[in-house]
Every structure is written in C-alpha cells, then in structure tokens.
Length: 439
Image 1 (cartoon, rainbow, N blue to C red):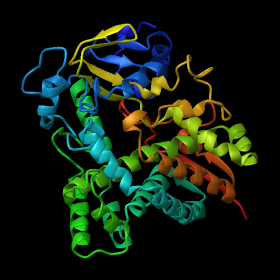
Image 2: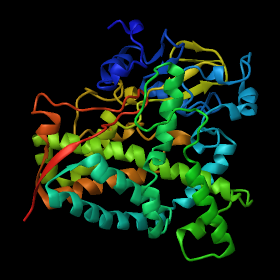
Image 3: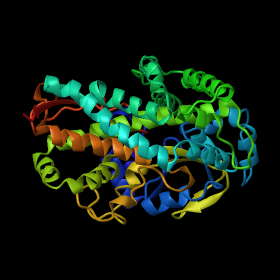
Image 4: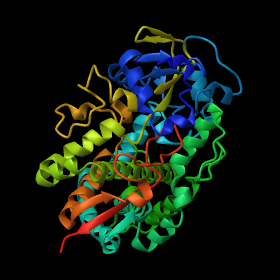
C-alpha cells in the first residue's frame, strides 16, 4: 500500500476506512501524512501516551480540522505555545465545551459533570432504560420490521439521556422536535474538521458554519431550568444540577452548568445511536454470532466491547501539540495538528491478536480506547454500554430471529450499507431489520 498517495480525508474511505487504518497501526503507529501535515497516531501504546499528556497534546482543536493554526489571528512560534493557545481559544470551534478544554479549567468542569451523573443516578437511570427499551420495542416489533436508526435508536437514546438529566416528560416532545439541532455536536465536528480538510461535502444535518453553535437551543433550555430550580427547588435531578458546586466551593453560573448538561445531552446520543446500529447489524448479519449470544447471554457485554473495539463510533479526534516533543521516533514541533486515530489504535496487532477478527470472547477487549483514556475518558461510557446491552438482551427475549432486510440491503454476501460521510466518525445512516417475534 502506497500510503503517501492516500488522503485520509477522502470521502470514499468512509465505507471501509480500516484497510488504511489497519495498515498504519501495524506499520506506521506514528505517521506524518503528506497532504495536510497532520501527524496521525494509530498505534495503541502511542495513543495512550498522547491521552496521558494533555499538557503536551491540547484538546483545544478536537474538531478544528487539519489546519487549526489558520483559525488564529497569527501563527505562534517557539517550542511552547500553551499560553498563546489559551489566550486565543475563542477562535476555535466548540471552545466553550468540556471536550475541548484542558487543565486546570477541564478539572473543574469534569468535577461538575461527574456530580451530575453519580453512581446512584446512573443506577436509577438504568432501571428506566429497562422500561423504556420495552416501550420502544413495542412499536417496532408490532410491525415485524423497522429502520432501526430512526425508528428505535434515535428516540431511544434521546429519552435515556433526557431521563438521566431529569428533563420533565412534558418537554420530551420539544427536544425530539430538535433532532436536527440534536445532531449538534456531531454536526459541528463534521463541518469544522471537514471544511478545513477541503472536502466540500454537503451533509444531511445542514451544519455548515464553524461559528454556528447548534447547542444554543439546549443552553437556553438548561439555563432557564437551572435558574428556576435555584429560585424554587424541587425534589428532582434538575434541582441537584442547580445546587452543584465547583470543587473549590464556588457556585457556577447557570450557563456553565447548562453547557456541561448540553454536551452530555448531545454526545450521549449520537455516538450511542451508532453503537446500537453497529451491534445490531452484526447480530443480524451473522447467524452464528446471534446463535452464540442467544445461547450464552453472559457473552453479551463482551460482544458490546468487541463491537466498540473493532468498529467504535469515534474513528479519530484532533489534538494540537502545544510543546515540541517526539513520539514513536517522529519529531513533532509545537503547533503540529495531531489526529488521534482511536479506530486504528483499537486494531493494533501489538495489542490485540488478529485485530481485524471479531472475537466475542476476546480476553483483553477492555483495553480498547473507544471511550478515550485519561482525563478525557467519556463519562457517559457506562450509559452507552447499558443502552446497547439492554437493547440486545430484550430483543433476544422478545424475538426468535433478527435478520437484515434484503430488499433494503441486498442478500448475504452482497450487502449494501451506507455510512456517514465523515472520516472522524463511524456509523450507519440506516439499518433495516426484520424480526420474528416470540408468541
């Protein structure tokens, strides 16, 4: 493979990015690609090193694309540009979000976030997930067929996160009505990174402007609710959010809590939608895997982990080297854009035996970094795991067979699937399934 001729931002790679990523993980764990000057980190060990060094590899450019320096009013010089980046974050997309923050501000935001999703709250939410799963399955199983992404996964994940955040049921329809804005975080990531890559792709979600913040509708919603609960406390989750404090005891402004809640609301949906779709596609497409899981339910959690490892929703995310460093024998000057390729690191043969092979009983599967690592580990990981696992469990309970709809996707051996046209995310745009429902 002549990797220097391949542009990793080429939309044609979206149907199968792993031919390139697997090659890089095995042969070039740290690789400076020639088209955009981006250092791609595809090795597992090297990716962990990046994630453990936020003082060297800033998250400020997580969605800014391969030329983030062009967004600043000037290009900094020197071997440490940390102060410059911190002083100019307003020029970067998603600059007010926890995912793009670095310590020490990230430390305070993360503590506030974890105060919103305590183990007790997650346990209560999981009890709701079991009830919701059956409620949503009632709709699609009655028909015997469904387009799983729109008919099940999208409303399901929205309602799960709405419950976690204590959104009153009377507001659910309003939030469902904002699904175009509800693809906010995902849309911003695509528009920012791919506009900078020069792809010129037009996306269904309508996101075009790097300056547009489609989270604003949710900022307004949560800010108003939090201000109300500070005036009139109730015995609910929103009141707990309103009473949350920063680690130093200071009271955050309503908008500061709203930003964190909105990010959780957004990120907790779209990636989980893709995880559910990928897991069900494999179950429906592989009768032997489905039979194994039906007969051995204790393998379902490990099946979910192997799905995350082999085909997780996040293919890559950007970092910015703010200090001159070296990684994997590659010199990385301050100011270099870095693409942390999670999708490749999770298939590194130095870490996972026969990495492209899907193994339901893989022993070391939890070493994957589909949910990140270190201070930016996804706080919603337990939630995503629960949603996918419970969906599979209840489908097995209520059906005797789950199959790919051949009219939509073609016969076995000649399947046709459409994937999101983005090099940063991995996910089906639609998945048509047929079910044999238990009597």
